[in-house]
Amino acid sequence: MWVPVAGLHPRLTLSALAGSGRFCVLRSRAATQKGLPVRNHRDLSDSYPQLLPSPDFGQSPSKVSNCRSESKRYVTCRRLAETLAQIIPGKQKQPCNLLLEVNPGPGILTQALLETGAKVVALESDRTFIPHLESLGKNLDGQLQVVHCDFFKMDPKSGGLVKPPVMVSHTLFQNLGIEARPWSAGIPLKVIGIFPMKNERKLLWKLLYDLYSCTSIYKYGRIELNMFISEREYKRLMANPRNPNFYQVLSVLWQVACEIKVLHMEPWSSFDVYTQNGQLEMPKRKESLEQLQQNLYFIRMTPRRNLFTENLTPINYDVFFHMLKHCFGKRSARLIDHLHSLSPVDAMDVLMQIGKNERVKVTNIYPQEFKRLFETIECCKDCAYKWVYDDSMNNTNVQDT
Image (cartoon, rainbow, N blue to C red; front, side, top):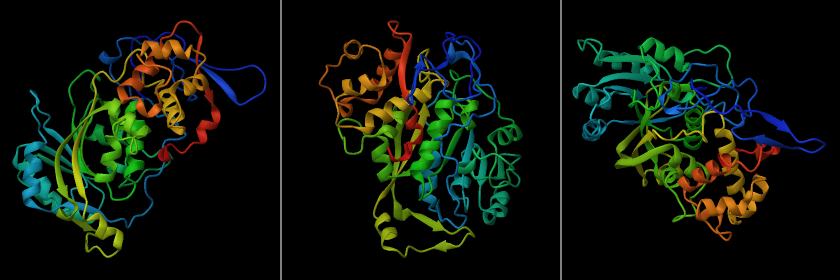
């Protein structure tokens, strides 16, 4: 959990309404997790993440995949690898030379990245590929490090004994000599890889929880993701009121949190699929053949420097999540009807402040407008209590929202 050093207002308390019932009221900037440290903090963007124990978020996915024989796709085309190696650095004034490559497999992309002079840490979950990857780093004076690690299973919420390929980010980053940076600083490192064919949505949700709470890899600053994602999930990720059929909570949260840019598009057929033991796999089932006709989008997801403000922080982000889940639970309803259920604050006044009328619907609100809506309610001075929180929402499967 990232708890900055300097001061929020001391209103981080959770109170219950008197009498029976299952509703409680959250004060402004309320923390709903037990054991979460309460500190005063202003100037959020100038403070360092502190390596505190991660709280139990309840709805945060604890297991991504239990299938050890799950097939993975890899970049095996030299042309594609060279293209990616050229576009990954971007146009930053101070390019980030440290790259974490996720599941490089046969190492075609790894070699292309090394040839650009980048320092690469290969996080490979399949032992079969590790000897070959290590051979790529010979005579390169530490330019390549190979770690037996599954990036997508990092920092399991279940706790207990952690064995490779599962790893704790604190251990990995400490071993690599990576130190935490302020959120206002530049990009400390870039992660490069391909989302697994299964569980793309679960992984996107896991990363969202980590990002907004500044836990796991985001304890170390604004980690940039450069990932291949399926066409289907990309459409959901980038949806807005102009394409309401794909617009959902996940769309809002990612677009609020990150600047997302398409760097490259490649046919699914350009990637080879290997089994867990490193054997090349040919598509057999009908759904696999249908997938091969789709495209993969290589996207850059850069956390916004101004994501966190005095009214949206790594402490009260869960209330923001709750607000969105509530709104998209009845996506055809008017926004004002949701506000009456969510907050005792004057709903019409809130709508006027964000420039909306009482007829506007949930699916007409853009991601950044949802953030402004949340912050407007948070900074309202008319009510001591800002949010009505239904604890039955804790049982909502956020991944289906």
